Amino acid sequence: MFAGATAEEEAERGASVAVLPVGSFEQHGGHLPLATDAIIAEIISRRVAFDYSLFCLPPITMSCSHEHEGFAGTVSISAGTLIAMIGDIRASLARSGVHKLVMVNGHGGNYVLSNIAQEANVNGPVLGLFPGSDDVDTARRAAGMATSAHEDMHGGEWETSILLHAHPEVVRPSYRDADFDAPHRPHLHAVGMSGYTKSGIIGRPSLATADKGRLALDSLSSSFGALLRVLGMDAGRA
Image (cartoon, rainbow, N blue to C red; front, top):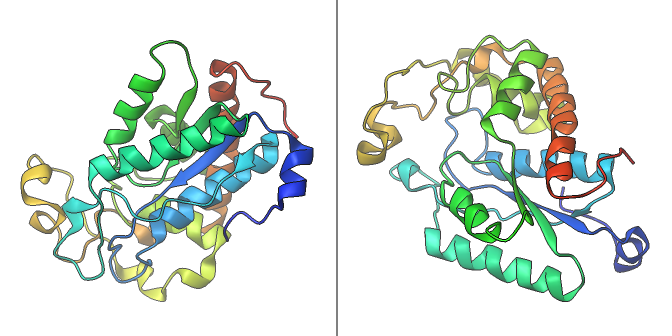
């Protein structure tokens, strides 16, 4: 699933914008893999890179998943490490003539990405963060999803639908019986996910379908064009 272009193909493309999937390696209950966020970030990145002829990078597969610790398999890195990784990637891209980057975030706990973008864009837009909450809300409506992003926080209708569409082989059949509701989570940063769910799921994966995943990706690709225009780039489809 990683980016498969050759050096010659990228030279011919001559993209001025790179797309970086930022995922995580954390529990997603019993029906989705630990790499779910990285896989979904790459699915979105590959789609928009193809649609807009951009340079698609391989994903960062571990990030800030501290709220999921205590569940088997979760591995985190510090916010400082993630900041340094993205800084190094941007510097390397700049040396090769690519001065604009979009971070495609697959993990809601990567709050630090917003700060990275804020600081990078002080002198003008050069670093995008996608998808934003408006992009996700629009995609949910376009896909006909029954849940909101707040109630469908982790391992639910959104993530399961995208994977059923793009990589159904990684979705275990138990998604049909994995629903768990915990809409009131006032102290998530203090007690972590385990303070509100024993299964690791907060959401309704039983509502997921491959068609919803396909429609959500179509909507996200359409929304991405607006971010490219903010970065001063041509948002025409390839």
